[in-house]
Structure formats: C-alpha cells, structure tokens
Length: 88
Image 1 (tube, helix red, strand yellow):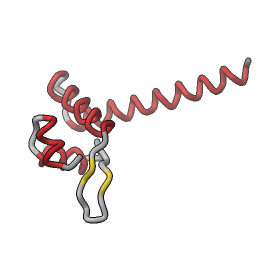
Image 2 (tube, helix red, strand yellow):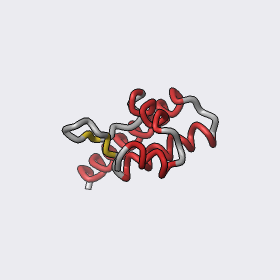
Image 3 (cartoon, rainbow, N blue to C red):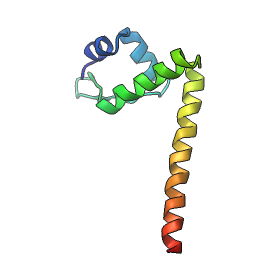
C-alpha cells in the first residue's frame, strides 16, 4: 500500500507516517524506485501508535518504549516456553 493511500486509509497526514518511519516505529518496505509499501502489520502498528499517543496520552518516545517492552516480553515468553519444553 502506498504512502498517500495508507495515510488516507488511516485518516492521517502522510508526513505523520514519515515521522513514524524516521523514529523507527514502522519500517515499510520500499520498491526499487523508493516508494513506501505498507503491510497490514505496518498499518496495525500505526494504529497502535495512535492508540498509545491519543488514547493514553503518550509521546512518541513513550510509544517507542512500550514497543521495546512488548518486544522484550514476547522474547521472554518464548524463552520460558522453550525452557518448559526442556523440562518435559
């Protein structure tokens, strides 16, 4: 999905998506010509950033921190599952 279409679909300005990309909150793929292509996962992540910023009042830095914590939790959950399997 292209930048302008993705922004329209999400009801936000294309520059907002560029800011999210610059901050590392989303990482759209690019065509050889440089056009951004957003996956469903990218769009879901943008909606999560919006939820954190608008709904909970977090800054973009706060949203980054939440994503870092969520990634850490997922990694730890995977590790616990692996260790549980070893015990069985």
